[in-house]
View 1 (cartoon, rainbow, N blue to C red):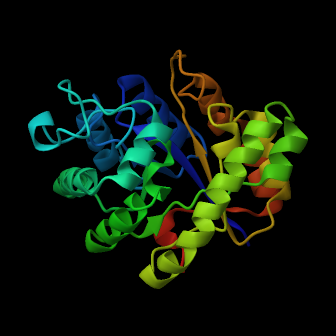
View 2 (cartoon, rainbow, N blue to C red):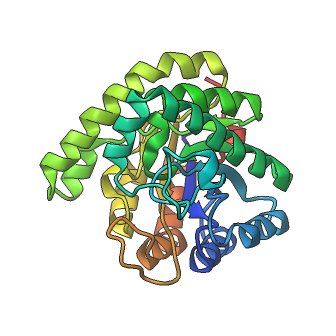
Length: 281
């Protein structure tokens, strides 16, 4: 029996996203969410999670394209005076890799985000990050150690399926292939460390190659073809359409509410799961 996790990223980023997460969990097939603890609506997201204990909640670490937890004076090489990280993830990743000074500030910032999550009292289901910055060395090493220290049960390793994605939509094939190669290499290098950690990981994670476009047809194809013991599908649901091409958007919410999606899950005998229900790898 394949266990599938259906996760919503950016929980706590806005009231629109929070409302979508709540509806997708109560009325749809959403099983978990990743909390952006520095988001504008983080406090209300925490309250929603407490009122809905069947929703597994993890930490969506923000070290790019978002707000820091620490004031700029404590992490002067990470953010500007406005306390915001750069939206240029690739450039930021290079700086994080090359600078020891920045790495020390990253450690302080990420620990602060873990501390804030711990202060909510919510069980830490899993750890991932905004724009997948957690797989970039040496961020990965630091964040895995923090995940272990703070008692996380799972960890996202973004291993998508290029062939399935291209069969569904062959547009942007070069970009999708590049992302698959880059993240595939990073995941291969990091897998041994995760296997030693005891953190649960899934064999597949779908969403990287269709980020912001997890429409019903694509998700149904995944669910019909998935043949691994464990998989995560992540979404960016919202009740309002935004101007970001990778989401959040109402289409991802519609997929999570789709009766057709639920029917395929039932027909194939797929088991809706969360990271705490998976065995440690």
